[in-house]
Image 1 (tube, rainbow, N blue to C red):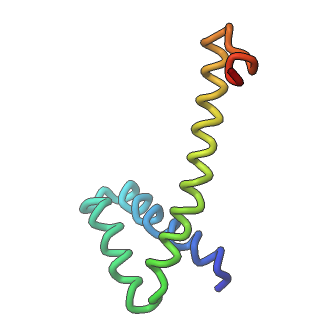
Image 2 (image 1 turned 90 degrees about the vertical axis):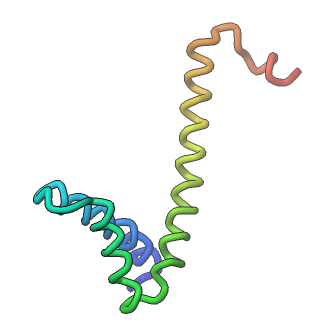
Image 3 (image 1 turned 90 degrees about the horizontal axis):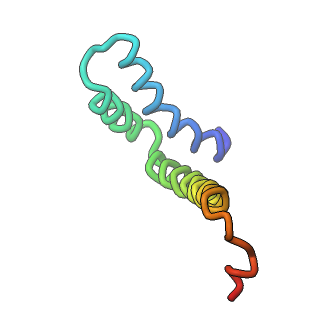
Length: 88
């Protein structure tokens, strides 16, 4: 499996557990995600590494996205804002 596909698979597994829970309403979605992560460890020893890499990469992307949206909202609400004010 390609490295990037492994990272996506590690993110899709707990989401798949949540979807299965929503379809059946059997048990707890948190316990289902925990058991899925626990069950993958023996067959895929690098699961923790790929999960952390995926979370770090996408977490940084979402961080940039949030600050971009915040910048858009600030300029919408605070009308006298300009680059001249920011550069002082």
